[in-house]
Length: 459
Ligand SMILES: Cc1cc2nc3c(=O)[nH]c(=O)nc-3n(C[C@H](O)[C@H](O)[C@H](O)COP(=O)(O)OP(=O)(O)OC[C@H]3O[C@@H](n4cnc5c(N)ncnc54)[C@H](O)[C@@H]3O)c2cc1C
Image (cartoon, rainbow, N blue to C red; front, top):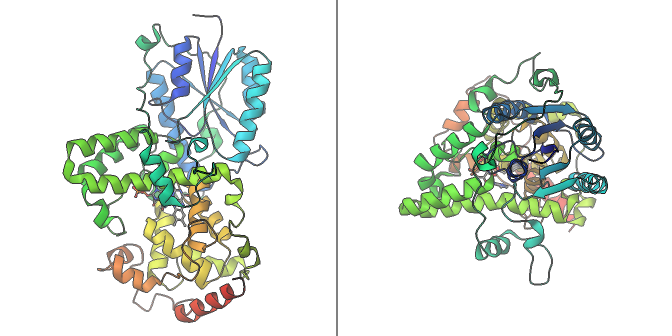
């Protein structure tokens, strides 16, 4: 063992399995500081929303327990990450820092600056691929650009070598010595107040989610056991438990996409009858990759229309009172209200219904997609900068490979197709169809026409 100390800086990778940064630190053999920094201050880094904070609390608590079993300890600090990591390096006299890569522009800028200043100071600094299956700079078109359309992107990634196999959790034996942690002051997770108190709106989240790796792997196992075979036929039906529910776990890295990919491949080899479902599911997982690739190559997707003509779109400018019916699920359109209430109660919403509520906001109410994106950012436990922005732009028609603007989802038709027995609506809007339920806040046909007229002005 050398005389140094290694720091593993955890970010969107809150797990010990398939964590290349942690594995590298263990291999090095020095005492380790496992650090997480809550950064709400660095320029350009978007503070995470309230529902994500709730999930983060659980993932951090679970990670601390997993590290504890390895003989390591999670150190928590709060503040601008560059300063905080620099301070911990000083405090412990660190000789090496390891982390897994991030893909947002502000995050990359921060990481690059830190890497170069630490290297200048003589430290070993290494970063690893852990959160995406394919690095964005490795998937390029014949002309050397990035893909703006999903299907060729999918073809390209699936015609190359498969994603690497996941790494096991590090062990003392693999390191050839005991794992040592370096004692250093840590904040108390409870003091970060990531959980809501007054009011405590998280009871539905507690019922639905078990943040952390154990919860993620249990979800994956249960999906493979009972749902993947029917994924193609049932994934669009919000009343069914037909999708994996892995999105928040992938967001915080409780589980890695490599673990998911290979578990699905192994399942496909064992149960050939589920092959169609497995392919369809991996295709969805690759939508997440596509979103991260776009975020990497075109960082403005989070805030700017990808199609510039949308800069001229005559969006309505609703007051917060006018937005409330949509946010609170009181629009008088049952499928929209069911989705918005599902979101409020559970921190997620079924993908089909996300498209419907987004289309209703952007088209029937003609509200700028960024307003909806911001609400989702605050209320989704899986809110992620790449997928959220890409999907909002997809629905709005302002994105690449997007649904055309004139495709306005009709929530009533969608309900009759995808919630045939009304059980999803009944679950979240039991008063639908009674006097207690409000009249529709807009006429669907009329508002659709107005949306198309508005669109005609920018074509
Ligand atoms: C307006 C809108 C906003 C969205 N915002 C987010 C977001 O902030 N974070 C997020 O993870 N997903 C977002 N999605 C995509 C999708 O709705 C969720 O990923 C999905 O509902 C998660 O449920 P699941 O894990 O059961 O999905 P499954 O069907 O089990 O899919 C497996 C995984 O594939 C990925 N995936 C599936 N569909 C998509 C998609 N359309 N785009 C990107 N990745 C996908 C997710 O990581 C998901 O966990 C959004 C969709 C819309 C229409």
